[in-house]
Length: 512
Ligand code: HEM
Ligand SMILES: *[C@@H]1O[C@H](CO)[C@@H](O)[C@H](O)[C@H]1NC(C)=O
Ligand SMILES: *[C@@H]1O[C@H](CO)[C@@H](O)[C@H](O)[C@H]1NC(C)=O
Ligand SMILES: *[C@@H]1O[C@H](CO)[C@@H](O)[C@H](O)[C@H]1NC(C)=O
Ligand SMILES: CC(=O)N[C@H]1CO[C@H](CO)[C@@H](O)[C@@H]1O
Image (cartoon, rainbow, N blue to C red; front, side):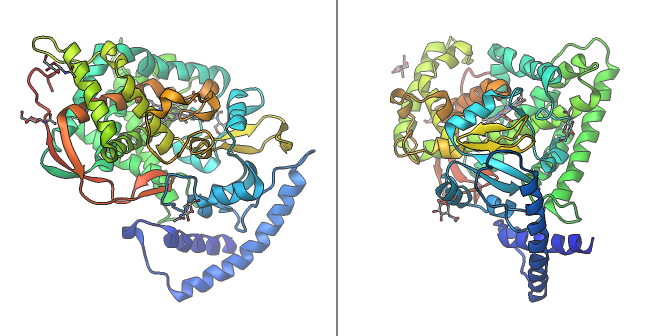
């Protein structure tokens, strides 16, 4: 118990040391450093014992090589989460790939884990879902996004839930209503940008949250502004606690995250009872679809956890792609020119006398845009890792992944592999014309039966965002900014851009 408290205070200090957000930076006093040293010694002893236990737990065959760190609970989490100013795999992965090869073990987020950075092995793991591996996220993440979450449900329940999501976000994607709704949300944001400096990262986060919250819960930013704001604020805190050291003590991001989760759940429960009080509703959002599927497999708890999980899966990823797409277009005038040409030609073809409304047919004409989106997905790596567990001992690359072990396929090293992508750091949409890349080489949405259910929607949203950006706005970057990669890629200053203009109310546009 005493050890736990010392450990916790040590973690807090080292977290502060590592925290790159200037507002969170605090000074570390000498006294606290002594505590850290004492804790480290104690921790070393504990870890030595834990390691012995792990060694004895292993079954036949060799575990992949690797280190487990010298702190219990924390393991190598701090090293893993250390920010790196590049889109390339960070120092944590690089050092280990150089030393151990593409498959190695570590200790992250409170659990022993095997990390795979090889395209073929990753593909194998994802395709053997349900037979050799199953989706299984670390407990510390589940405590936040939900224990009955999409990632932890299997077989029939997973199928029912996945169908509920796909029915709403997949099947309806071609409808004109979806197109005009997404456009209206984008334009509503862009309307506020003209003549101002904005921080695109912040704007994009809010935009993608508004989009997903409407598709999932039918909350509109006009009628339910207070609810949407409340959910957004809590989600930002919730997300901040993910992939952190899982210590639940006051002041720790992890604790704040757990509290935010319970606020979000109360709000979702309230929305459910409002929905329930209106009989014979049509299915107009994902929550309706889940409620309609409720029964012996899809319980209320499953519905709620799935909602939290899907909001989480959808909004940070999509906003990161909005932001990076804009940054790459800004930095590459040739790409901007090619995009302008494609989109003005689409406008020419689809414009009738008074209205310019995009449809599925016009979307299908955005072939260059599609490559821009692909290239952005490759470089930004919004969903950079997934988590699985071995159902039985699995032999991979001459090593054994023992039954019950967690596995973390990591996609960044594949997407930045110079043998597959010439000059991997360069943003080059045209590479997709020439390079014949196998499925395993490009997995921004994961793969197998758990591939992202929102994949088509996400690509559409980004394409429409680019459409409105290049046909209506003129902008420039006003300040240098740096990429920080720790949990996902972010811009240090939030990508400040000056918008000379955003011609939102162009003649003949859809009504806002
Ligand atoms: C560019 C944006 C996005 C990226 C990069 C992305 C990435 C991913 C990845 C890598 C997975 C696989 C997780 C795993 O295998 O454990 C996943 C799953 C999922 N995503 Fe996305 N996602 C994006 C947008 C969205 C959106 C907009 C939605 C919904 C509205 C969504 C809903 C889901 C759901 C429901 C799953 C779980 C599917 C299942 O387990 O069957 N995602 N996503
Ligand atoms: C980021 O990663 C690259 C490549 O592994 C490495 O050379 C660089 O030193 C790292 N930078 C930081 C700030 O850790
Ligand atoms: C669109 O139409 C206008 C007028 O008809 C024409 O001047 C312009 O060149 C066309 N643009 C494209 C990209 O086709
Ligand atoms: C916006 O509208 C103004 C006035 O009609 C026009 O001069 C300008 O070129 C337009 N900008 C863009 C990016 O379309
Ligand atoms: C429905 C289901 O599979 N729930 C699981 C969610 O995650 C926890 C923790 O890993 C499991 O114990 C549950 O069985």
